[in-house]
Image (cartoon, rainbow, N blue to C red; front, side, top):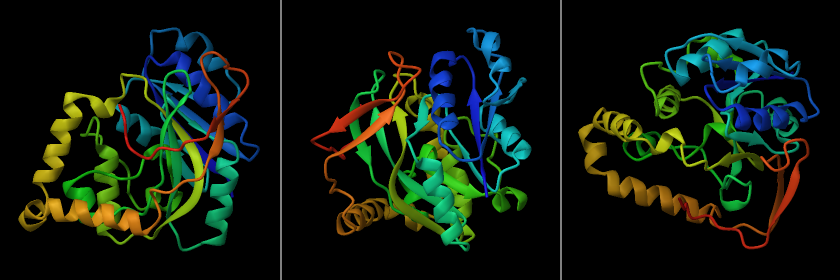
Length: 275
C-alpha cells in the first residue's frame, strides 16, 4: 500500500518548495503530483527538474479542477491533497497507511493539525472528530484537507471535487460523502501543519459567498436549527476531550530553514482559532 499526494499550485513557489520537502522525507513509498497552472513567479524554473515530484504544468479551471486532474493521474492506494502552504509532519504518511491497513472498511481518515504563522511558529492547533452531516451543511467543515486521507476507490466511484466551486469545494465534497454514509475515522495524531500566510483562500469574499450557497441548499429545518447544531457540535467536542491537549512539539520546514525541519515546542497548547 502506498500513497499519492496531489498539490495544486499557482504562484506559490517558495511555499511549494517546503510542501514538497515535507512529503519527500516521509520515509514511505509516496507519489507526489504537482499540478501547476502556469505560474510566472519562477516556479517553472525549478519544478520540472525536481525529481521528487511528478510535475504537470497546464492551465486549469481552478484549484479543484487541478486537484481532480492530479487524482485521476494518481497511482496510489491512499490519496490526499496538500496545498502549497501546508506540510506533513514527520511520520504522518506511515501512520496513515498503517491505520488504513488495520481498518480495511474505513474509506476516509482524519488527522489533527497545527496552525502556524508565516515563520512556522505555533499559533494554535485543531483536534478533530468525524464531521456531522447537518453541521457541515449549515455551519462549516470541521476538518481540514491538509489532514484528510482517503482510499482511491472513492475516486473510482466518481467522488471527485466539484470544479464549479472555487473555495469551499472540500465542504461540498465531504457533504456528498456524508450523505452516502461513507465510513470515516480519526487517528489521534498530529499529521499536518497549515500556514496562515495572510492570503489563504478560505478568507476571501468568494469563499463566504459559496458557503452561503451551500447553507441555502440545506433543508429549511436544518437552517432554522443551525444554532442547536452548532451547540451539539461544541458539546460533542467537549465530551470527546477535544479541548484538552498536553504540551507537544512539531517539526516543519520554514522560509528560514528550507533544507531542514526545525522543532517547535508547544508548552501552552491553544485550541481557539485566532487570525
